[in-house]
Length: 599
Image (tube, rainbow, N blue to C red):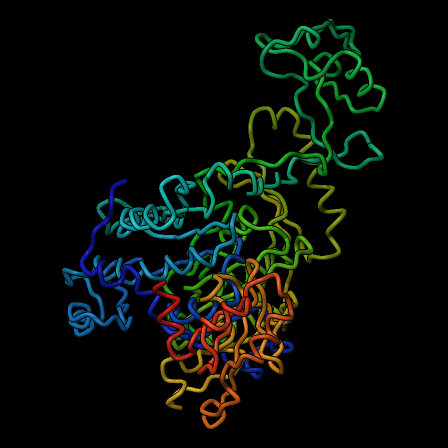
């Protein structure tokens, strides 16, 4: 496999291992609902440190990660600020921010992304996927790094998203699309088994014959290829003898066709002279394989998303929000629809304006789901923009204007025109069912499509979607080598979570922790214990040491399994434990980080 080389790669290759763990500090006054680390999260802080803080809680649990990192156009002014202890990278810091004339800006971008991609890979679930939006500046370098981190066979594809519909006359070629790279934790063919198909649009469903089962659309009653028992003559209601189309057979055997007729499931076009079609009801419709071209009229563009955001923050101007090209809610919601289940965790470590949280809440509302979001934003607008948007999405917000909801979009083709009564019936059905929810339902033909939009005049307040989240910042680093000196004394839960993950590469379940008897949890047939209190005098006392009596007590909890004990000191040798068949292994607390990360 080819390898992407960039200046500084040797220094950041394993940099994610040396990033210290930092506990998440909850701020109840900035969130909604009771604070909890196992619910929706918005974290303000450097995303590399935040990912390391999230690792013990979420490693292997996140089904879908969407990120919109700096595109590195040279006009963004982003800074490379990771504390890598290498002279060359320290020199880079003096050249910040990264600009168009910085000859190393592409290397710096790769050096910034590499450790973050390594951590994101660890956080993904077994069948999870990573989705990254980029433009032409770095997409090829990103693919090189992702091929190394994930593996070439885990590259699912590259989607072209139409980010703008207007023409840029100042450019050599007017850019109209961005790239969405998709990589899976599993091999692509395995991930395909777990991804979702896109639900077909409700457009085209109607009920012209007053079918008691409700609205329906018709599908051809034919199939590719030749099957002898599916080739027979059909007599239409108009007396026409029909054969399957050339090179095809009927869609089922003759007895099955007769059953469908008896159930009223057969539709005869052309006043009973055309080949039969089968009624398909919305709940029976099969999903659609996602394509690699996502047009703006399906998932939105940056201009529409910017307008949407400015509607939510009517008291601010565009310059106050400092937004350039926020991603549309519909774009992220489609990614969520493809890549997650109704109870999945969705993560965004470059969260910007909070679109991902908005998309998760909207998807949950539409589908009755219970997805959770984890957002990280390092800029100073994490509270006043990212979190504030989520507050407004949840609670509603002051708004005066017209809210628009697209209810139907159907391409106008010749066959659709020939059956235009079905289109008008579909529009009438929408008007009959939904008119009480909107001030106006407007059908219009635009760019060869019939679009039906529900319009609602809002005089004071837009309704919220409901939900909750916890706002967090990053606490002081958990530096184990400074525990006994008293420089760092993290709480039991913080140091326990970090040690358990480092020892087992598993997430610690808070429900298993028993601080009173020093127990953390079990993973892969081994129990993990921690003798610790955030009290320097106690840590230096005999009470903090692993003794023979304590080792026997730990082992007696489950004599058939191994026991790993973190403690500041011990009064029993490993040799004695082995001689007495006590399955306990001691790990000296101050050196635990060094020992496990490099084992």
